[in-house]
Each structure stands twice: as C-alpha cells, then as structure tokens.
Image 1: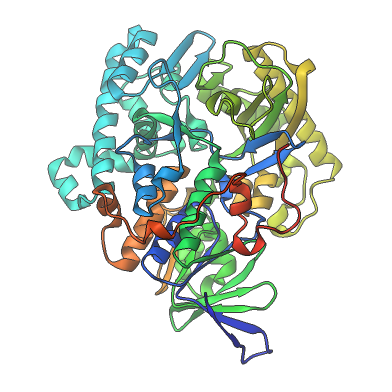
Image 2: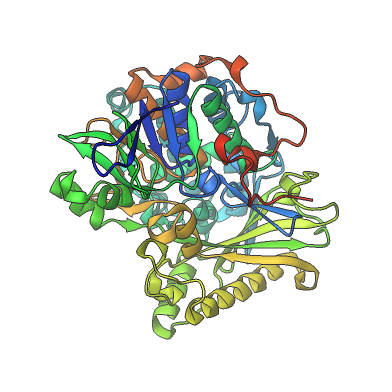
Length: 572
C-alpha cells in the first residue's frame, strides 16, 4: 500500500505510490495489473461505483443483468490476444470464453435483398460474400485480398515486427494504412449494396466507410474472423479477473474516487489531485480517462502540452455515438442464432445514414432508424443465473445516432455539469428514439412488446455521465490533426502515458488491451505482448484469491475497500 504523509500546503493528506492509473477501463486495468505484477505499488482511481468502463454491467429488478459494451470478443482461442494478456497475469483460467456460432455465422447481416451469415475464417467469409454478390464476385475477391494483406501486416506489427521492416517487405500494402475504408471499397469497384454488406458491422467502431481507416476496419474484422466469443458471466467477469490480479500483486483499486487534475512539474508527471483535495504523488501517471479531457482539463492544456497539440486536441471531432435499448421479456424468442444481427433498412447503408441526418437537420425529427444491431445475452450466455430467469430473454438493441446537445434537446451534458436527465426536450427525444428502435426490432423479430418486463434506453449523455467520454461516444476521436492518426500511448510529458479508446491501438476490448500492453512495454522497456504470447507470466498466480461460493464479479470490481459497501445491486 502507499505510504501516507501529511501535506505541506493546506494540510490535505498526501499519499505516495510508484504509479497512479486514472480510470479503470480495460486499458487501464491491463496497464495497472502488469505494473503491479512487476512489483510496483500501483493505485487505480475510478469515479464510478465499479471498475470496467464500457465493460461494466448493471442490474435491474433483481432478475436481469445487462452488459454495457461487451457484446462479443474476437480472437479468444488458444492463441488469441485476450487469453494471452490474461495468461501473462496468471488469470487465464479465471475467464471462460463461450464461442458464438463460428461455423454457421457469428454475425448475421440482413438487408432488404440479402442475408449473409459471417463465419470464422477469411476464406469462408470471402465465399459467402461472393455468393451474396455474384455480379461483384471479382470486386469481393480484390477487397478480401487487400484486407488480408493489411490485416496480416497489422498482426505482425502487434507481435513485434518493426514498421520499417513491414514497409520494406510490402510498401504498397503499408500505404493503405493511410487510406479509408471508403477509398478501398471504391478502389475495388463495389456498389452501394456491396459496400453495405462489407461494412455492415460499422457499429463496432462508430463510423461510416469514408470516415474510418481501412486498417482499423480490417483489424476489427480479422479479430472476429479468428473466432467470436462471449465471456461467461459477461464483461464484468473479465474486469473482475484483472482486478483480482491487480490486488493480489499489491495494487489497489479505489472506486467512487474522482481525479480533479494530473500534477505536472518541470515537464514530468508527479501525481494527481482528487476532488476532495487529496494529493497522491507518483513519478508515473497513466490516464485511462478520455483523451480530450486528459489534455484540456486534467493537465491544463497549454500549461502542460505544446500549443499545436492542444489546438489539435481542442479541434478534434468524435466518432458517432450509440443509443442502446435494453430489453427483457418474460418469454424466449424462438429460432434465434447464436449470433449478433446487423439489420439495415436499405441496401445503401451510407445513403440511409446521410438521409437520416439530413431529415433531422431539416425537420428536427427522426422518421426512421436506418440500421440496428442486436445482441442476445440470453443466447450467448445461456443458463447464466444473472442474465435472466429461465424462460426469459435479455437482449440489447443498438443504433448510431448524433451525439450533439442540439439533437438531444439539452444545453450541455454531464461533463459541463448540466442537469439534463429531466428536461422535457431530452425525455421527448429519448421516448421518440426508443419507440423507433422497438419498431425496427419488431420488423426483424416479430411482435414482442406485449411480453416486455423491462425496457431502458441509454443515450450518449448516459454514456458521458458514467464514463465521462467526450461526446458520449465509446469509440473515441474521429479526427485529431491531419489524416486519421491518433495519439500514441506516450506523451510529451515524462512519466505520463495515455491508454484507452482514443489511442492509435484502436477501439474495442482487444484494442484497448493492446494499448495497455504497449504502455507497459514502454515503461518496463521490454516487448511484453510477444513475451506473453510466448508463455511468459509476470507475478505469482499462487497469490490470487480463492473464489468462494457466491463469488460476484460486480462486488469484486468495486475494489477491496468497498466490496461490502451499501448499494450493490443483486440478482435474486
């Protein structure tokens, strides 16, 4: 534990650690766990009641548990990325991954004229796309050839091959790293329908093809095409394993503990100050908070960073945000695949999205939901007592909508301190969106409203409130300076690192975990990801706690000091 001492300023307490991690998303927990396993005294600070960021769950009516952001995970087989990261901390056997239907299809894409069930494996994926697009089969083959080359280079880079070597081997492939998915689809000569089928899972990163890099798209697809899985017990089970490793190796998690600012002196990080005035001193600070908030607010902008970086960060735009409608029924839905469903109202995903935005700009209303993603927790984690009672259904409906205050009828969001939740305009828009989403869902699933036992809608402002992300998006920045670059995990401040959805390692659980490994690798001066893939284990797994009967990942994720605190929602 950290050494405590009295402050010299206004008498506020000061504490000392080797490292402080601000925020407890998966990127922050991976970084903290490995630093603790290396023998560092590490403190993780989380403003919410539980750790996990977008991977946390919430419970309702003592019967249902809803996953906020863990809908499926890729690359979780024996040689997978997340199992390797868990294994390096000695907790791989504490998280079981249930496969989705990797043979028949883990994603079902539905448009008015096509259905494609996406299986594991690039070759089988190619064959099913070509069968759905027979007139464009040559274009599909061109695109998949390009995608596998770019994805292969990305995998090699992740596992330690220097970029200069990758450029030497295939400069033509590497040049595509600077181009968009839209440019690649154009290059291959795909129609609007073909573009829709190839980019149907845009909800995984919150951007249309012209606004996302090809490398990010194919990395995401490669991740899932290595096999799609769901963690048994939901995303919180994964989070709890990281928390157990952190605490077993001497680290500490404090929840309901908000950071006011990151302390910087003479060009280096020196610690953090909490909202209650407490100062925690450390020569190493890792921010898993929103990048724009880290630079502009926690670090004071120009007081800490070069003017051009601050200007670039201030001008950054955010990815689209997600509206999620959480639904529970007192019946099972027949005939569901063990897969996500990606439904598109038209064969032109991009045109439909643009038309929705234009209609809202012109009328101030929505007339339809152009696309919808379905995630069925009660199918993926069938039999789990926390998901829902036997014979019930638990699923989530998600769509991409604007995140701006104007769209949601508020004068600001939680980050601006605005009390938005009871504003009539906000509540009216929320009801409007909820009904449109349910209307669209019933087009796919058939009528189910008369069997609903719980329905709840999360907006971008909800997300902003809980994870304090700019724009309420879970996907990070859309633009940050020229091109589609994103920040590295290293900053201009000595001892200050950033991890999470905004870094160049990308969105999603695997992206933020890889970013956390990159940050620790820089700090420790060793290539950790290749090492854990080769079987290296840091720390001593014998120190991990025994899981007693009734073990609850949500309780564990509150941190040891608050496990018995009041207010924990239960099932049953």
